[in-house]
Length: 260
Length: 108
Image (tube, rainbow over all chains, first blue to last red; front, top):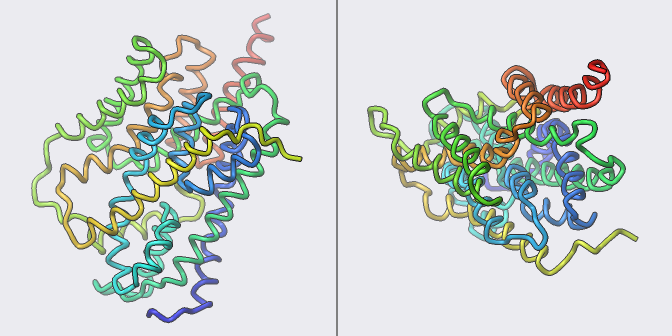
């Protein structure tokens, strides 16, 4: 399993390509948005390539000020990307035996789509509980393709951005909340697990009206987390990240162009 | 020659710190949580927090008293439950363009 197979690499790249094309419009909007916020053209691929997590990039760009507020940007990034903790824990089981000098750099490429596509491939090859079917080459093929697609689409957006002029006149500013709503819908797991979202939104809207600008994101995030902590636990011990659940989720959501 | 004026030290510092923060979230799960079970409470917080932050980020649109902001937002929210990525974005943008450009003409 550990030997490198170019065939697997190519297969990974092939299944990531439609996904990369699917979120190219997202990258275009983000790139154009960055330029409108005063990013230099070269700054956009730098920002998106180094971070490589679209949700946090949208969140940070929405609150962007000059000079940038580093602390707020880092806090928001950590919160939006906290889901990587669970994903990394699950993927870690599949990477067992992979030396750290390979696993550590490879984890840079772990985003929602890499994770889903990689685990779906492992699940397709291996019906048992043991994660034998996971392929490092397939994972790298997927991750590198998605990374290139993301950098290329955000750079294209940055180049096209100045041509768009005032985004508000033709409603282009509405693309941003629409993308966020679409991303959040992709995370929907039923009403009760989503109650923290409503708490966040309510607190953030109240903060927008009552507090100085810039406080609404921390207020909303804290209200949501408090709500998640207070919700009653459903019965039964939670197994934590387990390979089978991940595989089921991977099967469910491994449709090209979905999620980002 | 591309415009490089935005590449200030503060910008580069922000990019570097964000990239480091994101990378930490990627390796921390592998380093620390690998092989351990996660309690239901922590799991729920981790599951909920991305949506919490993303919705908080767009709260200014929801807080706006302006109907030309709220109406297209409602259209986009409805579209997100039914349509895919492009459909949702197009619905929001077209609704905003309609209410801001076309409606004033129709109303005279």
